[in-house]
Image (cartoon, rainbow, N blue to C red):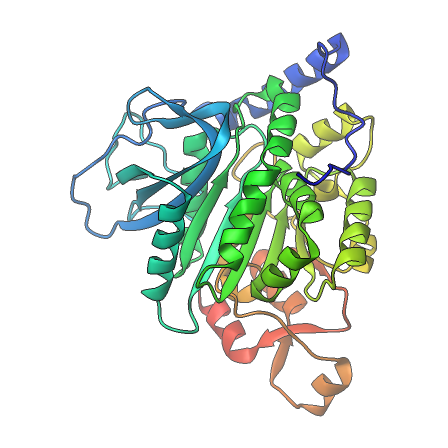
Length: 410
């Protein structure tokens, strides 16, 4: 195993202080509304009820969670000590509102009104997972064989990670193979330190998953990490060998960091370490929001150090080589403003953010003035559609005009 070289001075292994307990209680008051409907068990009860207009998404699952013996639950928040695999087919109702998860009031739920499970099963082993991945990729047309890898964040139950990912895949109209990496979060506010250490424990499992994707039939890979999942992603990237980075790099189309729960100084060091070991040819896309209450609490736990996902200096992040999309003005469905990334799927993968891997085309201002290509700035497009600000590390970043028109039509 590669030595861990990250920074986590704020991690405490003994009993939390009274001040920390009070802080978590404040956070609990803020987050109760967002957490109240999340089921701890039974969410994968199967429904066979017909629902015209509903769409089913087949999600591959890699996890470090412990198997759960409760019916229709599959995994809990404890650490398994090994990597496990599964698949699940989740149906999205025809009445679905973009950015939302329509949880059933009882399971299995009504597929006309709520997310329901249509199928679920464990996958025997890693070899079976890799075979299934390649089979699904080869069923796609050449040029469209893509994988979308999602790494969830802190305080996330297994069913919640699965349903949230399904929501994003659905709203983005993703056509490739969606793969959920679900690490052992207990889904409890008071278990911040447990979750953080669970994320660190999952590094080797994520490394193995990235290795499998690099060796698969995938032509392109998009990675989306949320909150503490970004910490896991960055620390895993640090421990990849140069040979692994060379195999994986050409297939990575985009890395999107949504509300990263990472100390800003640690993030700078992580990026510098990566740049020393490999050529970073494509920028990270970072979704930030200055009103993210969850990251505000995390910052206070960490001694007042700013978190990347709530960092106010967009220009500094852009200077590190990141495309920064500021979501502060975007209205969130959760009261703590921590899941705004879920709203972004409906603004189309053609924005160059995620999923379809159409990519951003970089042109300089001279080319634009000379009319070499009919272009419209991504900043203008995003301002018109999502009412958010954008800071870019290049003079002008645009997408082909046909892609922009498609995005506007949505």
